[in-house]
Image (cartoon, rainbow, N blue to C red; front, side, top):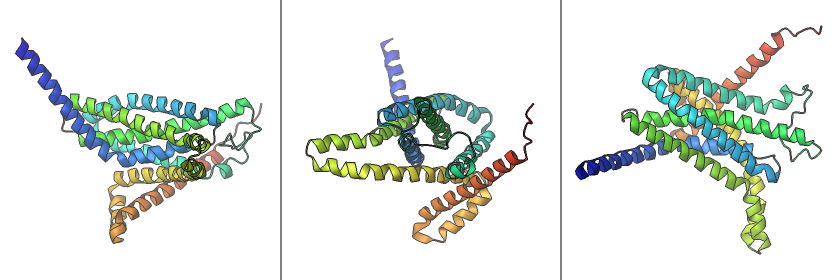
Length: 299
């Protein structure tokens, strides 16, 4: 009986080692997407009151965990029973990111006649009521969770691709670890970034020179993350589209290769450009459909 127990423990240890190895490989493959996820979510926390920054990050983090609880079993089931559906679903997600990116850039122009103010920042609008502040905050949280859903799906699909030959138990263990690690890593860093100004103030009050440097650079960091977050939507979305449509990918790879040593950067820029074009087309279709849709006549 003792020998059987030792064999069982050895099997468990071996499986955990395999899961750890699969997790390490998957984390390496998905690091780029996690970086985009970080930029996007740090941007979502900007524009809210200082005392609401961490609650907003925590709300999005909980939404991200729910996304992954849904996506991990769904991804495993689709991979097992309908592997051909993975890429079409990813393409839909990529197109959604591109649409969101362009719609965000054009929000003021597209919604200038809306009765509700097209405002994304509570800080910039001190005259807002508590209800309006809450509405903006909830909108930010919902938008961040929607975007996280697509990015989480890509992380899980890429991770699953690195372990497709592994036993199902190892796949479940590794995907669970990658999902949890991605959430903790991304939202832990986001929480740290949004509280940089508080850290800078505390250090400055203690006479530390680095505190003043942090206070000066924190606003610029948040502004840059806002730009990077929007750019990440197009880069990730365009990359998914290119990966899903082979002919487009071949053309973009050929153009990028022609730039020599900066081919990787060129490919990223081309993916982003593709994302902008795709998003603009979708926004144009959306606007056209809204204009053509018959408006209900008042009774």
